[in-house]
Every structure is written in structure tokens, then in C-alpha cells.
Image 1 (cartoon, helix red, strand yellow):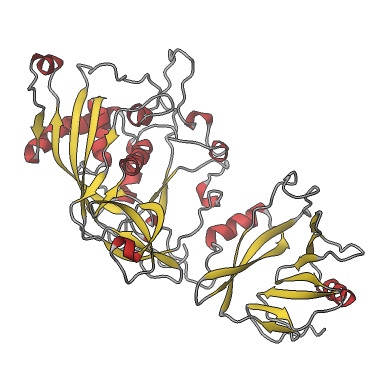
Image 2: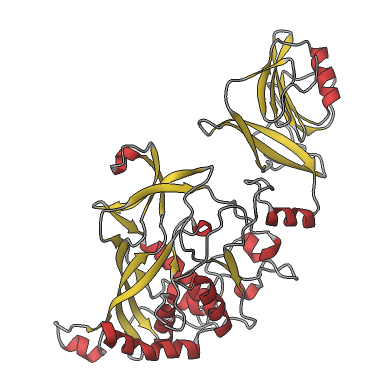
Length: 502
């Protein structure tokens, strides 16, 4: 069988005729690489040498190609998947074939779904190569590839500069995010305020909020629907948002998470949640707040957890779902995004610890053009939502800090970053406090069934919140972290979203 290259680039094809076992073995020996063999009763794992007798099915793979075989009678039929051209004795399958490399996750060697113990050679990095028809974007084959393992330093540098979903000849844009460092001192822990009574020296009430979209916004339900399902019959498939009476809805939990992340960054707080991986990157003092004893006698809540909640503590803020004020939503193209790379060198300091919390810059306009992506239901620019934020038992400093995060401090004009597509400029929302409803004293509330909260709006509202903002800066805010976050989330902005890799 001839091995001369008859085509360059991506190739998917089958052998024009079945070949004898000895011919297949000669071809495999000449190619060299790694093997994964399959018998009816067992598998080989990934090995570097062929056994004396070929398996009924198997694959040989290296950095350029994968060759699969399947026994038919006494001979074998072959399938070639290659990014380095085809061979003369192979007939290409119909399609506009392209390929893309992705990381591979190997089963643990103790995996029980395979007969026998899995084996993997050392010093080799395995990846998956997706072969897809460019006309339909449908993946038809997934091949294995093998490369010499990179050192940790080489891999970090490559992943930081050249994400695998893009080719290295694309221009590199400035990164669309920044890290807000952790304060140097340990978080101060306190007891929760409690839900059993309204405290006389605390604030209780609600904020009526109006949210205005600055750049297109998509908060996904995780459901893909047909265009007809959302009255857009000309579009085949669409990623959907929550809808109520034909108006878009942002879940209150989504808003709460956005506000909490900023609140954590500008106060000396722990992580709102942690994993085994994140615990390796932060000091123990930054671990998620949890009770220290059964009787809750020891203080255990950081500033953010006191307000937003933690394990065994419900928190003091309740965010209602934000409902759109009109049914005039849009469907637009949403490009595919980079794979998150939490181990990138830019995310850690010289000690190998997390360098801070990650926040994305706002942009003048979101990117809606790319080679790959999907149509998504979106709130367009100037679309408005309304919502309410209820609070019992907040201190003036705590409420003031929430208002600063919502962009109500004129010295730090910030906007929220909500939903998906943050790296490409999506999700900018500005907040207007339409009114503040503040409950009076405990005596007034219980003296009358018809007691009404005091309501503030306009100039009266601005005057009312100034002492709370001052208390926040004095008691809770970390000034350096606030300055860093305000620089990232300042809005309006003249910053452009990155159109390529960064």
C-alpha cells in the first residue's frame, strides 16, 4: 500500500479495498505511534507496541493522524482521520471536512466499565481531534492525538497566549478582564444579625430598581428552542432566556450573584463558594464561611456572608426576578467563547496563589460576528427591567456598600456585568434606584395596622443615602480594591471588546 501524500490538510477517508492482516501490520509499524486495541472481552489501554495477533478492532494514532481498523472476514477495512493529508489508497468521504483539537480527559486507571486495568504511557499529552463538516458544523468523528508532554511552564505560556480554539496567526487583543487583588489582612468574622426581630439600630425596607441594558444581554435558561417557539419562525434553533407574558426575565439569583461578587471584592471577604481546586489557590482564611461550632458561639461570617448568606445562614438580601418592561426582545448571533483556563499563569502570583478576583471590562458594543456560535434570545440596548431588593436588619454601612456596587456613588460610576458573553462585551446594565421604602421605628409599626414605610425618590433619595455611603467607606470598603474594581466596571466607556484571541 502506497503512503505518499496525495492531499494536504484535513482528510477523512476509507480504504478502497479491505487489506490483509500482514499488510496492515506493516503499515502500522511504518507509521509508529500509540495503539488502543479492542477485543470482545477486553481492551488494551493505550500501548506503544502491537501484540503478536491483531485485535478485531483498534486504532493507531500520533500527532498527525489516526488510523482505525475493523475486521471483515479475514481482512480489515480502514478509516483514516488526518490533518496532514490523505493516502493514495484511500477514498475521501463526502463533506467539507475541517478539524479542531481539544483537550482530552482520560479515564482513571481504576475505571470499572472496561475489562482489565487501563494503561497510559508516561510523558505523553493526549488530545482529542474533532472532525466536522463545515457545511453543517456537525462533528462526525473524534480522533485521539499524542504529543510529547510539555513542561508546566511551557504549557502555561501557550495556554495564556494561544487558546486552542483559535489559530496562532490571529492578532492578539488586549485582555478583556482584570484581577482585583485580595486585601492583605485576614477577613474580620462576626455573628449574623439574625431574622428573629427587627433591630432598632438597623435599616429595614426595600429598593425599587430600574435596570437599563447597555450592551446586549443574555441570561440563559440552558434550553435550546426552535425559532417558532419564541415567535421567530425564520430561525431554526435559539438559546432561550426566561420569559413571562412575552417579557424577558432575569432570575433574582443571577442578580444576587453579580452584586455579591462585587461586594466581596471591595470588602475584606472570603470566597462565596469554594472547591477542592480553589482551596489549593487561596489561603485558608479565604475559604467559604462555615460555622465553627455547633452552638454558633464563635463568629464565623465575613462581611459579604453577613449580607448575602452562607452555609447555615440565609442572608439579609432578597432579590426579586427582574421583569422586562416590553416584549420587544431580539434574537442575535452569540459567538462561541474561550474555554476557561483557571491555571493560567496570569491568574496566580509569584507564590502560586490566586492573584485576585476576576472581573470583565465593559465595552462600547458587544461582538456578534464569529465563525462559530449560536443564535440567542437577547435583551437589546436600552431594554429595561424592573425589580425590587428587600432588606431587613442591614447596618447603614452594609446598605451603603450595596448602593456603591449598584453604581450610586457618583465618585465611582459603575455598571453591573450580567449573564453570558462577558468577554465579548455582553451584559452591561446600569442601575437606577427609582425609590427607597424605609420602615419606621418598631413602635410605629406595631402601633397601627396601617403603618406605611417612608418613601424617598429623586433629590430626597440622594440626600438620604449620603450618610450610608460615607459609613460604607469608613467601616467596610477597602479603598484600594474599590479603586481597582471601579476602573474595570466604570461606565460609560470607550473600550472595545476583543474580536479575536487575547
